[in-house]
Every structure is written in structure tokens, then in C-alpha cells.
Image (cartoon, rainbow, N blue to C red; front, side, top):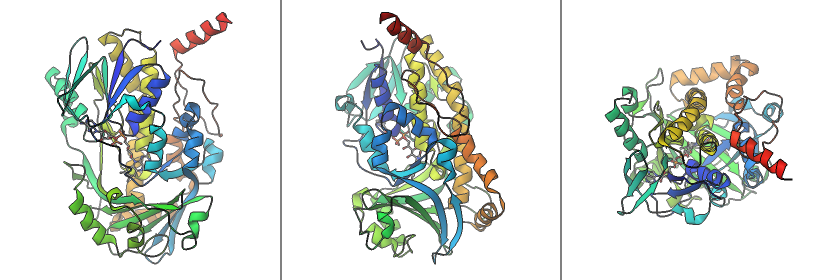
Length: 457
Ligand SMILES: Cc1cc2nc3c(=O)[nH]c(=O)nc-3n(C[C@H](O)[C@H](O)[C@H](O)COP(=O)(O)OP(=O)(O)OC[C@H]3O[C@@H](n4cnc5c(N)ncnc54)[C@H](O)[C@@H]3O)c2cc1C
């Protein structure tokens, strides 16, 4: 029998879909509301490692994920003339943490996740415009005038979260919103990205290789860095990043909107078409092989929000921690949020009071906030090292790659990979690799269910 409370999830992105799958597995009632009329296959390459692949293995999506991803054992940095300037090795990852790093195209992972959530529980064309909570329930109103009522709301609606806006108004009225949470997100990079249609392996032999390869080309006479990844299906996932900063320091700009629409995308396509591409040829070869409607231009905003919950509302994913993507931690942390939140909801009473929900949210925050901060800080450091294009950042990159020993560079990776949450209401998969893993909380309810099952036998 499903539990008697109902979760309303706003947003069917990475976090929303993972939540849907885990809530289904936990037998908790839920509905997902997504503003888009249809889920479009937008995005470029992403990479995941041990800190989320243990969860993938536990919930049974690792095999499907492997089919759409490639192992990658290193990243090469090259200049405009394809001369290698630095290299980061990755072969130690599998041995140390039990899982190799894998790259894939975002739309492929979205398809895997979508196949794991009952279609009738995802409501498209439902743009949240209002949220009202009281002691008993919470009610959502959508742009089409319809409403939905549930026991709690999870805002998985991304960096410009409407759920967050309503939660913050509620917290402000109570006088508990820190001023810092009202400051806008910042950004120091913007990005043009896409995934090509299948290309010719005879022209690009890297496509036929079993192992994935990442090449990052730093242009010497502009602020652009270009990344290209060979992903399964003879395709390339590519992105061109532009760094906007003064010569020293991080210097992010304030951001007020998430993208610029088609005219700005067309302008950036024109700007970068003649750039040399990392695997040879020009960027236009890759751009022309990519359906125009799936090319997007995005700002890479960042902000670590302090307030994640209040009353019957909680935020997950980019809605509460928007990270720059260089360290590959944004979606990983969105999934970790989903797993830890469902763990905490699994243990609340069948008919939870407001106090039960707040206690579950507080327990979630206690585990997730410090780990998200680590991922956020590492993302910030990596973004300037990998994509920083001022003189200062070029010098920093050279120093780090040529003078800092491998074991010190690995410390950053160790920090994020020692935290590998799994869900507490399913059998755990054993930890792999040789590096220690942070202890996980055990579900009281699950333990009771297991012993009741054992006694019944
Ligand atoms: C170029 C790039 C590369 C990246 N690479 C990596 C990587 O390698 N590894 C990694 O872990 N992360 C990576 N990330 C980050 C990752 O994509 C994000 O962190 C992740 O998608 C966040 O998921 P989310 O579900 O929180 O938000 P989103 O994926 O943004 O989903 C939010 C959803 O909510 C919907 N929505 C918004 N407002 C409303 C509303 N009012 N009503 C209803 N629905 C609404 C949106 O339409 C959307 O579907 C990368 C990001 C970029 C830009």
C-alpha cells in the first residue's frame, strides 16, 4: 500500500525525474509538474564518476547508463595548433573509487531517466505560478489556471526556481530569510553547446574507439575554450565556453536571466564557426552536423543558496545550489539531493504532521548542505583552471599542471568521491575501490520491514 501523503514535484529535469523514480521505488505517492509542453533533447556532454554511479548501480540503471556512455581515462589540453599543453590522467579513478569516469550526452541520460518514471505521473505544460501553504497542505497554481494539492512540495525547477521565489517570500514574512539569499546569481562564463548527429568514423577515428576522450582547446587570441567529447552512436558532444572576466580574480557578473533566445544563439554560432575544433577541422563542421533546434546558448550561473526549506516546501538541485559545470557536479548533486530526501521521507509517519516534515527536511539539509558546499567550491576552482582564459588563469593552469604533484591534485577528487549516498530503503551495493566512503544513515523503517519479513518466513 502506498503511504498516505503525497509529494508534488515541480520540474521534470534531472532532479525531478530522479525523484520520480525514487519515490516510485519507495512507494510514496507523487506527481511531477513540468512547464515545457514536451521534453526537448537539449544539452551537450556530461561526465559522472563514483559519487553517483554507486547509486545508479543500486537502483538498477547503471547497465543502461553504460550503454549510452563511454569510459574516459584522461583529458588533454591543446592550443589552437593542436599542440598539447597539459594533461590530466584519469586511469587511477576506477581502482581508487571503484568506478571509471564516464561521459555521455545529456539527452541520452534524460531518456534513461524518463523510461523509469510512470508517464502518467509527469504532467507537461504545467508552469507553476503560485504556491500557497498552510498547516494542513500546500496548493500549486499553474499558468493554465489548474491547481494541485499535496502534503509537501519539492522545487526541482532549476536555477531560476519559481518554487524558491515563493518559499523565500514565505521565509521573509517570518523574518528568517538571510539577506544573502536575496542576492542574484553570478556568472563568469557563457556557453554554446550541442550534440551532433552521427558523424563519419573514417574522418574522425576517435569515434570508433572504445574509450572516450576529452580534448579541451584553449584559443590563444580570444576568451574561448572549446571542449569536444566522442560519445556513443558516432556522435560528438561539444561546447564553446567564453570567459568574461577581468585579468585577475574570479570577477563574476550578476545574472538576471538564464538564456538569450535564438538571435543571441545565432550570433554566437556565427562568431565561433571558423574556430579550430579540438578533433580537427573547424567548429562549423560540428555545428552544421547538429540540429539547429538542439543548439543552445546558456549562461553558467552560480550561487550556493543557504535556505533550502520552510514549512511544507523544500528545494533540490540547481534550485538551491547552482554550480558551474567544469567539475561535473551539478547533476550529481541534484541526484544526491533526490536520494537523501527520499531516504528522509521514507522514515516519516504515514500521516506526517508539519513538524514531521520539518524534521525530515532538517535531517536532509544537515547531510546535504556541507557536501553540496564542497562540490560547489570544487566546481568554482575547476572552472577557472579548466576554462579560465585571462592571462592570470592561463598562468595558474600552467603552474597547476606542471608543478603540483598528482597526489595533491587528486585531493580535490578524493573530497567529492568519499561521499557516495545510496538509498536506505533498498539493499546497498558494496563499496568498491580502495578509498574510504563516508558512513551512511540506516533507515529505521526499512530495518523493521526486513525483520518483519524474516519473522514471517
Ligand atoms: C554545459 C553544461 C554542462 C554540464 N555538465 C555537467 C556534468 O558533466 N555533470 C554534472 O553533474 N552536471 C553538469 N551540468 C549541470 C547539470 O546540467 C545541472 O546541474 C542539472 O541539470 C540540474 O538539474 P535540475 O533538475 O536541478 O534543474 P534543470 O535540469 O534545470 O531542470 C529544471 C526543470 O524545471 C522546469 N521548470 C522551471 N521552472 C518551472 C516552473 N515555473 N514550473 C514548472 N516547471 C518548471 C524546467 O523546464 C526544467 O525541466 C552541466 C550544465 C551545463 C550547462
